Length: 399
Image (cartoon, rainbow, N blue to C red; front, side):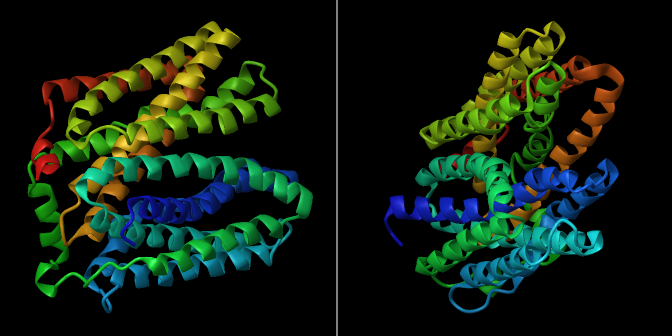
């Protein structure tokens, strides 16, 4: 597949097909469970089925080091995507009244295979997209995440309420099957030569020895969490300030996701050489957005809250797009799978740790105090970036 448009469209579809079911499982399905009498504690424990995403760096090792045939990443995507497809069909065969242990086990399996399938798909994207196309590829990757939120967190709930428990799983599984079939159009060339493969310690050690890598790891863990946490707690904030649940769904679930997707796509228009300069500006925007939302939480002005929510959605779209692009840039030739897995695990760990910490801060200091502290964290990231302009990325962007 040599045409850039077709290449971007295919990888956008496959990333959407991998993302939307997960969003339905973690965001949509708990509402269905609540309707069927699940307690808050049970729903909270159910969220632990998403833990495989933290261990992506280990799941990447077999993908990197065992490369069958001339199309290893495609074969790995079919293998892991097939497991994901089977898990979705198995979930469709159950219902909300089924054994909670069975639902948890199948959801854990779906999470494992979706996390695993993400590695060969994005390693293949890193290999196939030439450097000039990577900003657009990263922005599309971010935009389809927001599209997955619209479908998995909204549309599939409507499908479930209308057609029953199994219908969303059949729809999402069908989309995944189509994407995996279309992946067969990709010709990736020869697999990575054995000489380029490295042992576990040597492989990770080589990544951290690259210029700018240590700084980039710090940014991976701290740059995105302030806006991610603000977005996670935006819905409770709006509810606590008197917005009806239906309006919250439209504001944060649909309207915010559309703004985020558009901002992500706009970020893809940046020239590659401008990426290092764009990151500090994005960090400043992150700080302003979280600080304004913190002030809005205290002032309780509906207009202010809406404006702050819209700004947050846009800066989060830019931040996620830049993060995906730079993850692609820091992946070494011949080690795309392991480097992508390592960076994704750090990214996920930072986001999960921040969300857990935010919950404790919320209970103690309220929305304004919690968001104010994350605005301070975002300001710290700004200072770090301005003290280390470029953070050693320029050689990656000019090679």
